[in-house]
Image (tube, rainbow, N blue to C red):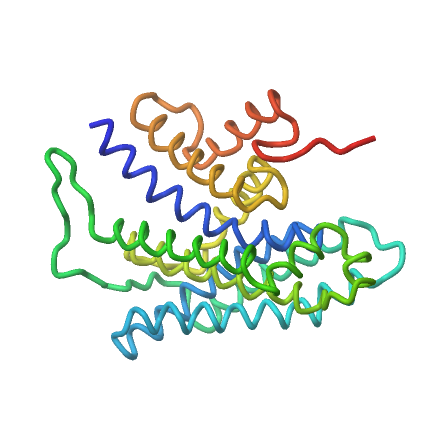
Length: 291
């Protein structure tokens, strides 16, 4: 029973980690909380859905949605966030307000273009479940585990083994010094959006497959739970985001199974966040600001 719950929590936590990864990468390099990343999650789920029902190719659905939404992120940076951040003496809350507005627009746009009803992927493997002893593993969970692992490995390789990743880390550390040293900070920022929004799109598709339903409200819960995850993991820390996502997935599954929750299950993320921040205010992998 316990092992079964652990597997369930890993599947949910993997989706949380992928959804929040984009916001983490963008915060790390721009220092803004991009709530619109939840809009990428929603739009990616719908683009993937239409590609899949048109072609019957799940791989093509993932690649098409991730690339399309990643490019949307680059456009948003060039046309919205970039000009806002370039303003002198800009209040830090302004990019957050803009992100909230973009997310709201994305939800309404999907509702207008695709309708308010539920849509189902209806994707099934030849075998629905795999049984290992007393443990039952849905094949869709295996898809989530495999894709999450592949995407996180790709992220690690890009950030640690490529020149573009080096540029990203330099820009995240100090954009002014990086720019003075000849680093193309615009390309590094574009990389954040391509990877971040692409990961969110993949998470949206996997959510649609896992629950076999998507609606224009799909991004509402991830939009605030994503904030809890990136703060819990340590703002701008990709490893912390993965650990925080898995931790919250584990807490939700275990608490909803073994206790009678006096709060909605989706509020567990904030309870865990409050407890951890009381012990370690900088988050699991964050560092205290030096005075």
